[in-house]
Image (tube, rainbow, N blue to C red; front, side, top):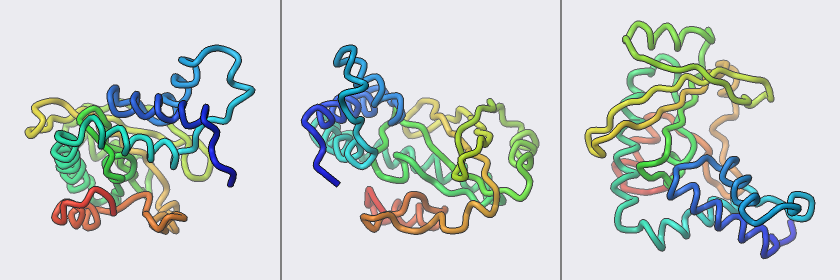
Length: 204
């Protein structure tokens, strides 16, 4: 793969600031970063891939948030672990910034639930008297899947944290724990998360 252009790297740097400082997700942050550089660039520049953006996010954190981000990440992982316990019957796996070690207090917790019955997770939240919203996203097979979103308190942060739960088929778990090209896993179950928390490591 050819090296990224200077403009693509600039877009990644702007997007990284939006991700860290405003809690934006990668896709919207890239698009806003591109838009901020002016019209007419869409056809002339390639957007950064997620690996480049994550690299820029880590650099931004190191430069501007190095004294606060580790504690905020630990608090976000506490929230993730709590909800993985509450939803244990649905084989929850953590993904996104909280798993990858780049989360701040502005990030959201992203859980993937692997269900035999797509409505079972909603029923579980109702039974636990949890208020939630229902949205959607594109699943691993390219089709739309439900996303259950809750706002939950973090005692450590003293504020609410957003938890998004994507409802996937049980069969989607197959191959889901394979490492990527860099040897890193895109998601992890509760025991894997606990090992990260006990070791103090940012990444798996």
